Image (cartoon, rainbow, N blue to C red):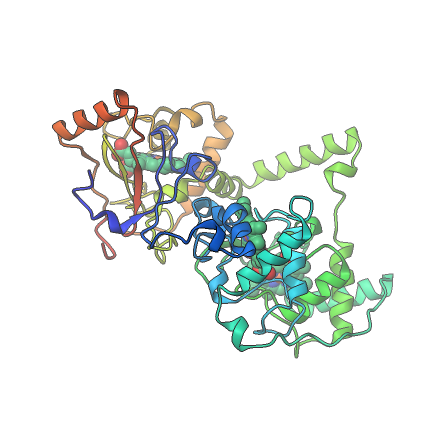
Amino acid sequence: MHTRVTPGRAIVLALTTFACAATVAALSPHVRAQRGSASPPPPAARSRGRQVYEKHCVECHGESGKGDGPAAMSLVPHPRDFTSGRYKIRSTETGSLPTDDDLLRSVRTGLPGSAMPGWGPLLPDDDIRAVVGYIKTLSPRFAAERPEPIPASTPVRSSPDSVARGASVYATLQCSKCHGEDGRGVGAVTTRFEDDWGFTLHAANLAEPWSFRGGPDAADAFMRFRAGVSGTPMPSYTGTATDAEMWDLANYVVSLRRKPVWEMNADDVTTFYAQQEAEALADPVKRGEYLVDILACPVCHSPVDEQRRTLPGMRLAGGLRMQLSPFGMYPTGNLTSDKETGLGNWTDDEIKRVITKGTLRDGTRMLPFPMDWPSFSTMKESDLNAVVAYLRTVPPVRNKVPRLTRTFLPVYLWNKFEMLILGRDLPSYFYAGNAGSTGGQ
Ligand code: HEC
Ligand code: HEC
Ligand code: HEC
């Protein structure tokens, strides 16, 4: 069935239905990961920790712990790669391993603001200890190194003075470059980054401490400034600021907390959402970027490597090949603003027509998959305008993507027969590499 490419190079996604497009793959219970590795040992021979891992963690963190489970593809931030031994939430010096308590805490309470659930209420504590023991075996660093805990320091109690000193530390250390003057990203140079593994990451919104991975309190924030957040652009300030300055800074960050929706009354909620709406309308490009991300356009419209990382500089440049037996090989289009090979000289209406009606520029109609345009068909005009406004700002990348190749008729008929009469699940695959004219295969 995979005559055009060797199955070994397939990105391992198998869906049971074609209508479940790749976006849904991440969420679908039907997703099966097919791995080329040797068959696993029988359950009895596996440690308790490994059993817990295989039951509860593989979906996101992957069988080998590389952070490449079937749900990983569209998650921002991306699940941790346990084989690297690098952890974000530590009470240890920069570059050091986390302590067992750090890991236990992350697993028990989860990492707020990410897909990482808190397992404390779901698993017996023995299982949590066992699975933490198991993930440590996935990196050789744990056998060779000891964590270096950060010595205790005296907290500075929050007070108006401490908050004011914290605000000036914030200015001196130029936190606003990434978090904005107000901590919410306004005026930041950028708030979108890549982590050290090449995956998208957003700078934290400092007005929403409940989304901090390491916890919302001043002591948590202090520890992040002291230890840094490994693998991300959020640096350690050890050596740049004193402990006392970092405590003031932590008190300042806590003071930026806005009232969360669950503490608001009905009037507050109405005002809050009216403000959000006004901000969204005032900045359609930012709103469009957000919509493009949550509608998963970059998941299909960016070519990826074998680890499903977007090829460098190729976000939204198209060329990802999706094989949907029996229908054909669908390379995705270039959505950057390149005039020749992207959307640069498409009209707004031409772009909107693809999104809501599945009609391509030459008038041909797309099937309702893999791109699930029927779900986009009721998008509000203001949202569509925002998507187009954002796509116009995506820097041009030259990448000429070939049109889809339909499956050879007898193969198509046989596949249909298998699907409809024999009731077989026919897989769909993503392939690593770029089908377009730039970059390697
Ligand atoms: C639904 C997806 C999902 C599942 C299931 C999941 N995780 Fe995670 N996990 C994540 C994501 C996403 C991150 C990265 C969050 C970040 O980088 O901010 C993560 C991060 C982690 C971290 C790293 C913390 C750090 O300091 O870097 C640990 C440890 C962890 N997970 C353990 C587990 C264990 C053990 C299980 C199973 C019991 C599990 N996870 C199940 C999504 C998941
Ligand atoms: C180069 C960009 C950059 C700079 C400079 C920077 N940050 Fe961050 N910060 C980030 C990113 C990116 C994250 C998100 C990390 C993640 O999601 O794991 C973050 C996360 C955080 C968090 C949340 C930590 C958690 O537990 O999730 C806090 C608090 C924070 N930053 C405060 C600050 C303060 C205060 C400063 C200045 C002293 C600062 N940052 C400087 C990029 C930056
Ligand atoms: C599940 C994967 C998937 C998702 C998600 C997806 N697309 Fe597509 N898209 C495709 C495929 C595959 C094609 C090519 C189909 C064909 O040639 O028949 C395509 C074609 C297009 C085209 C036409 C490109 C051309 O050069 O002819 C545009 C424009 C487009 N998509 C925009 C978007 C936007 C905007 C989003 C997000 C709102 C989006 N797509 C989400 C898979 C996807």
